[in-house]
Length: 129
Image (cartoon, rainbow, N blue to C red; front, side, top):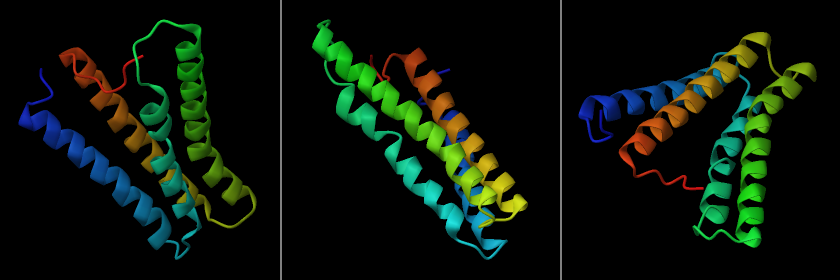
C-alpha cells in the first residue's frame, strides 16, 4: 500500500485532526487553556529531525549530531506526557482534561508513527538516519 493511496492519506489526515480536536476539547470542555502548553511540544518534536538528520556521512561527528537529534526528540516526546501530568499534579487542570490531553498525544503520536511507517515502506522517508 503506497503513501499516495488517497484512502491512506485521508485516514492519516482524519486521525491528525481527531488528535487536534481532542487537544482543543481538553481545554474547552473544562474552560482551562493551560493544557495548550503541549501544543508547543508538537511544534518542537520535529525540529531535531530537521536540524540534525541531514547527511548520510558515516563519520563520528555526523553520528554524534544524529544522536543529539534523537535525544532531543525523545526529550520532547517525554515533555508531551509530562506537561499535562505536572499541570494535573499542581491542580491546574482537571482529571478529565488530563485524560483528554493524553488521548490527543496518543492519537497524534500514532498518526506520525503510521505516516513514518508507510513512507519508509515506500522508500521516501524524510526521517533518514
